[in-house]
Length: 72
Length: 495
Image (cartoon, rainbow over all chains, first blue to last red; front, side, top):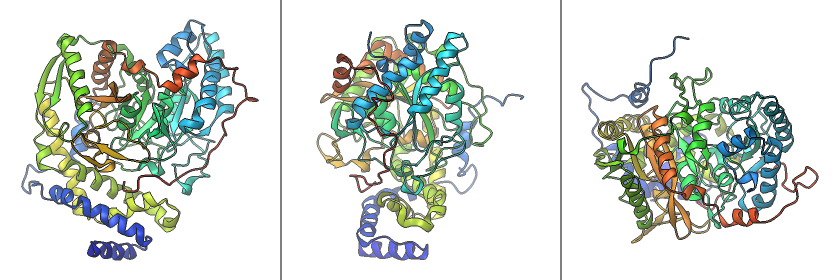
């Protein structure tokens, strides 16, 4: 835990930000609590070779359901 | 006749049309209701009664001269992250407590130009990122109305307003709608333009009508939907006459019920209410089909939501970082925790969204709509924000968006509607459909509301108020302050 607090403190200083120690510890603790969820997300296999998914694919998928634009 | 404040949008329009009520009378009724109940409920942040009276008088003139617009004379409120010309828009932040925009947001302009009467700007939490401690649930004032569209949900439930606009990034409309027993529609991503609305996450933010019924939401959607030049992410497809498409033959409707994710972590009574809702539709002739969500086993959907929201919020709020100390402690944490995610984490979270969309694409090959639980519990107490899951209790914020954020990440239209009660508190279901098919979603929700009366139930404080005779509201008798101070403290410190 202390490593996480120290990491966050240094990153925030690098960004020109600071948090009171209590809030710093709270933010780090929340991240630690969810660490396994982030690790699971980061371990998902996303293809390197085509057909691969791009960051914009989700929005394009939504738009592809639309009718064609009106002429006007 | 009941108080005019008790009537929904469609009922008020019918009353105006029949000349049994006028917009000024309706406005006075809702202002009286706000005066009496809002000191306890805490939905209103800024009251716009003078401008509202002016607008209601114009609406009255238009009804008398047979030139009403679509929402002529309908009182409404806006979550206070939606900009309003000449009316302060705080974003729930001390940083903007004196901010008075010079232009309306697109949604505010459309409501105004359609004859709506803006009555109040409504409570939220700083930059729509959590749950405030100011707004209470009208069903039990010791309990939360959730958030971040806290005031928007509570105002409709308390019959202070028949229509409000909220915003939803991970469940900020769906969860309050479930908790306070109202209808909240999160349309397809891009269906309602976001120009002039404080952003939290540009790939997940949605603008949403909150009403008592699917019919009322359909009427509002006809006004607020459609492409806007100032929002390049808004969709260009034609806006249907939603209210004309509410009828559906239930014997032809195929309702998908998920076998994964949605029922894994949930209060047993809420799960039971969802199954009862499924049976209600099945008994009326709908065909029920189950569908899997394989991606939910591969991808952590909660981590995906947090990674995207915090990364985008940190980028969006970069201009505010010079005054970091002026942000509330909760929002400081949002920005701080974003620092744990690098660019690759964020971009891969965006990519993984599509895996979930593909699951729903397969579901819609066999189902017209899908039906899921709404919020996974009933509203917790302000001083005990925990999720009671039957066999365990978990911090509420760890699981609260579990059933709702999935529709932000997929961008699918979903409507949260009341589906019963547990411990005397409302529970809700969600009905979702394919992109840009809000008409189908609203029709299915309307069909459910024609079979049930959960959406007609009123909290005890409203029933008592309705049963009491009150003096007519006048500017001289008003008791609600025009402006309340912004509060950025919350009882929940782990959002």
